Image (cartoon, rainbow, N blue to C red; front, side, top):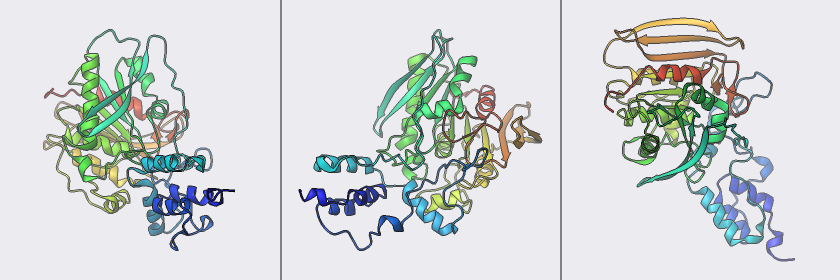
Length: 405
């Protein structure tokens, strides 16, 4: 029996999941664990703040640990949701240094990771992977090309997934490809790797990732423009939509690249400038932090979906997205109520300009939690009962073109 065989690999796995890499390395080297390292049974499993499935059919999608005290829940969630970048590479280093250690944990497994899905592609259509790189790094992305594409200048919708999701999962859940096929437009799905964020969240809370020409905004805008170039798409009709962390990223794109994106959709997200670090991110998600971000230039047209039972990103954040997007010119306001066939009530508030065109829309989903409204169960974090957010966003988008393009 070797010295390595006496290592408690269960404890090494637990420490790695929790991001306690120095403690995990110490155990692998045969050193005693730090006194601060509690046994596995004394700690809750790593949790994700972004999205958790309901325990029963039709239940609300909520944050984990919502029955705990607020401070305790926020502390545990923070450890998982904003784990330091580079954890994936550290695990790879551990594997290389200790080849006999066996399988280390999948850093997405057990924390609400997206299920593997296969996206159906109709005859004549394509769903292909690409990669974009610039000084900020590189990101893989997938692009859906509808069967009706013949080289014409099509609109482009950029879809930004939520934490733990990936392009295939998000495409399946939102059914955006089916809309693209029916209405003939292109869809791009940037993918956030675990090397950038352990739970594949877009880093909307980092100050460096809220600036034009830097970080993730430059990568997302670069992907959009690359799709426009490759497919000779219409540069005046480029749009961005996202869920949760992806919704916050979409709001950042409106603030940083209003010349690229003609309109945006924010589902269960937050406004640009809501946070600049981890503590302020949790304050913003909890609704207790005001937004001081400047207006999105002249006001980028924005459509918002947000559940009023969302315990992960409080619904006041949807109101704040609208407030930040408000243009200088006055808008008329109308509100209507309705109920979907699935039984979800909603209030739709529309603000129109002098010509009667909707510039801002806010869909308050009554009783809905943290999930894509009207989505498909083929993907993760969807609520099929609600209004079809994908269809409504596309309808809103296609009434807007960017005059600066």
